[in-house]
Image 1 (cartoon, rainbow, N blue to C red):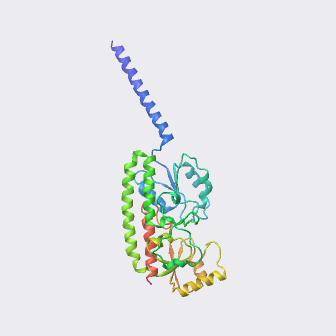
Image 2: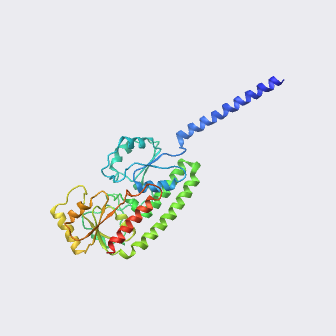
Image 3: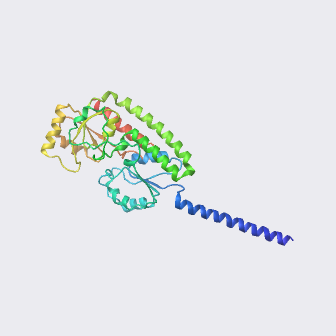
Length: 322
């Protein structure tokens, strides 16, 4: 009798073990076909990477595709970066108007991969690309101009904290759908990030309110969203294509703008040398200050976005206050 009982017990143990293994196998199968456990997320630029890292904090760390000081317009995708992209469950980029290096890989992405194009998500505010060197509406900075279907869009959309909040909410919702196990954490992180972004906007408004009427030029037109949100008086750009030299006629137009509008500040990006910009201006007595819209000089992580915009605000305040 004891031998029979022990045989039954052994059979039950084997069955229970096989049953557990079967359930585990089924769960693994369904998860690999319909969801992902800890998501592997690849993001193109550092400020957006920071927003994603903030939503995923405590759950995952996103991969950053664009190296520091590289331009999203001219960067060539390296094999190691392509491998990171191919191994991702989810890819987040601004769109074809910014990351030219992504256009070919994006077209080859498998439909099962999560792809978020920020310039196409619901609620995102898009502005049309400004035309010419002198912006006629430069002084009408309180009026908001939205892009329509016929406009080429200005892709620097992350430089608006309002857009950043839209991005955070969208990513949190998307991740919650794909990774329901961590949905509450994603929503909690998003709520905290939104509160932080509200505080950032308030700080920048206070910081910049005394310099709103001061005219300035940019070397490359990349700050329209920041200018609109904080009602700043950017009146024109020095170059239409930063990779082509200025013609004599174009230089004359810029010099006339500086003289007639009493411009004291010109802002350049980190990828353009101070000497190159000063030579373009022909030593006209303006202050050239450096802005870093991609946060290249700052460490990547959840707070990179806030620090990037604060650095832009501080640099503008300092230059325009002179």
